[in-house]
Length: 198
Image 1 (tube, rainbow, N blue to C red):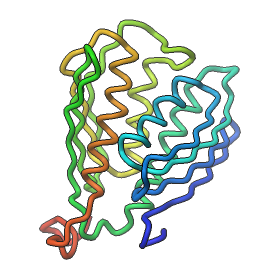
Image 2 (cartoon, rainbow, N blue to C red):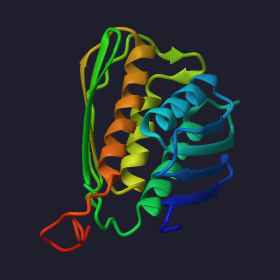
Image 3 (cartoon, rainbow, N blue to C red):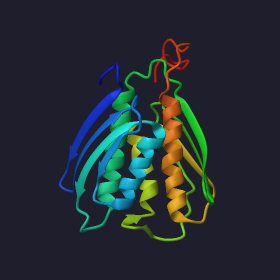
């Protein structure tokens, strides 16, 4: 980890996927994304842009099977990158929340970089796919992030009928909530916990 610019670089290779990812929490929203799934690329670009993170992702996987392994494993790698980049969590605000509108969709995302993984969602989709992205993989992607980043992550879908808008609202609200949580505050001299550790 680079303590001046909270960055990470993760490479995960299995028999099913090969994923290289770099993340800069103190970026400006630049993204270079290539997963082979156009809609997923668009969502990851939104995550970087709206969280003001610099993100590069090069992912290859067994898409001839389906999109599951590649999307889930990208979530695992992104979660690991967040965990590594945030480091010892000293002086960060720890919590972040965002209620984000996307046309008909209204999404609440709230998270805690607690070191204790937990995931709650009530996503509800009309169809099975957005492009070559299975809508059911939205849950699997964020579940993977929550557990590999050791974060408590909640989504509440307050409204929404268009699946594209619902998923995009989830990615954008997550980005905004994470940006808030990793923001430092000089008043926090250690970690924001009565335990003294996160």
